[in-house]
Image (cartoon, rainbow over all chains, first blue to last red; front, side, top):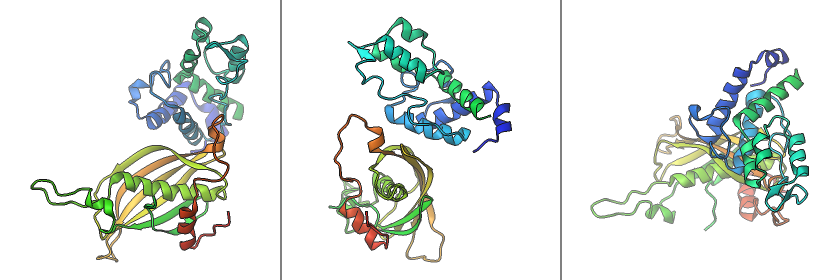
Length: 139
Length: 172
């Protein structure tokens, strides 16, 4: 479905959440009530790496905008030695993530820089905020 | 054994849809194990559901590959949905219709419908027996850091033969 600019402007936060919820229920075969704003895609909803591509495809179809590769879920951060050292995200790595993911909340990662905690920034709320920003920039 | 679960592409609308057929034959060895006689139970040869999914993956994979002039390594990444409501038996024909729903540099997704054609009733409408939705990744764009063979190992000679015998150009 493609929205006109006027419709995109009229979408509320709840509208966006409902659409994101629909996408995640479909892509991850989870129940609607599991998709809460704070749920993490991998830890709580069981997303695997290939599901991220599926989620991007489905968001594009649902909202009618185009998502560039790495725009929603940045890739190659964890493989870069400048960004990860001894299993910890470096200051440079955190800055890189902040730049690439202005839609994510880094409070938890600031407290625990373990590479395993990076997955926790991919929450349902982060996806909603990403979609909201995309719609606003298109309006 | 060639791992091909479609016999012929009968329709191709580039970047839109592909229709392929597969005749189910008692000559296929696996049908004699699926299911063999056991105790008082008589043999029950039926096309395995997993191979129906594979047939749709091949149909949709060709559609996706054709959209990129067969230059991309198209890998099945996810079976998003597979609902199969009947057990096809030998003597029938399966018709796979794959429709492209998304295509970009990263990969593609397709919706698929499988119908059963009864050669004994050629005028009858085919019976829908499965809905299979699939997602494909373009490997070179999604597996950074993993070394893949340079050549296109996906669309190998057996696929080319299938395409040629279906009247589809294979100059890739």
